[in-house]
Length: 282
Image (cartoon, rainbow, N blue to C red; front, side, top):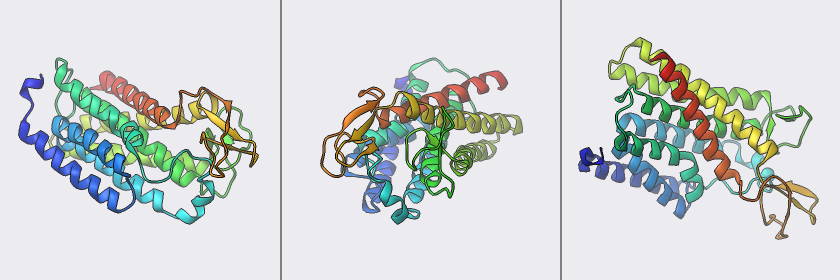
């Protein structure tokens, strides 16, 4: 219950999140509002989930931020397609870490459901973080593929950066991103002496959940995510106002379903798939 929350852990989570947020801001990975998002999600994840939950958030933030700056000049030409730059704002921070924060809260509000370090709440958190990590890795590395992407729904070639477009490089990066979170989470269980069976289950759950969440993100991007068209430039974009300054018109999808909500949905799928595997095998 919330009454059992350790105030010291919450304060510690706030302090650590502040350090991470300020560092991210100075390095250009977070905007001012993004720092606020990092404080909210980080404080809840560290303060209520503990160091094992918080470490997964750090791994995601550090690796995804590093990849966003990797060969950044080559990616700059694609900025017109994406709704935002590499500096994450409040909505992006909550879309990536918000579900893990919610799971941390629920782990205290609801009766224990196979709780503890290797319990289903932690497995779900690992699946959520694996999904956003997999999706970020797929995006940041997939756009550098030497081969043109293909639509996940039709298999037809699409322009680089097109929402719902996939490549072999991006798919491999997605699996690598999910596996990384799974390996870190599994290592944490080894440190806590949870046993090899729990480690193997968590590794499988996080990797499969992360890959599933990333694939779901691409599926939404190719079908129902809001995609706009700039009549001035004759180009497809996720921006309501194109970089040229012209207002765009809706080409497909729903206006309410932007990239941030798609990312949150992907993390939810990752958490559900991972939790389902965990419940079946733990």
